[in-house]
Length: 160
Image (tube, rainbow, N blue to C red; front, side, top):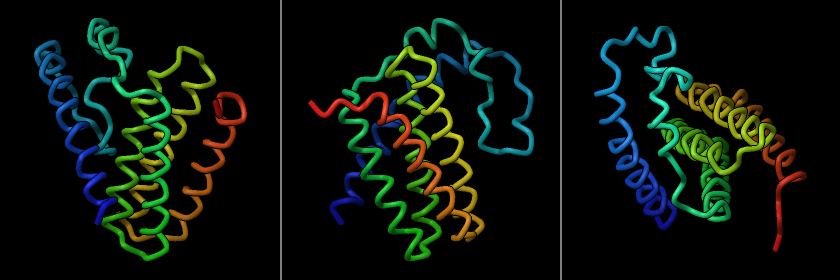
């Protein structure tokens, strides 16, 4: 029960953040092409977003807090995969993808940002696997996310 409340709080914060970002973005972009086959693809590629919007974005939580939440969501996702709870797998995977999305802004270093983007992309694939109830594929993608995290932590983790 406690983890569901925590996830709900994080979803609420991210929802509010998305409204704050979406309103200026929507007014800055006059026409958009459909997202295409991937219904969750961003409407406007990052490179085409107004520079002021990207420059103005900055995470509000410390990286350690973000990492703690990523770990909690990852663990919840793994439990949901083992229990074959597809809707929970999907919810946790999308939350992990969004946390990875924010994580990209915690460093200017290319390798750090690449690892965060790779985690984001893998979590999106995992959400799709959960939706399709492909739990073996979801397990494989969860192992890939764990490897991505370990690779980044080998370089950037500071235990102090």
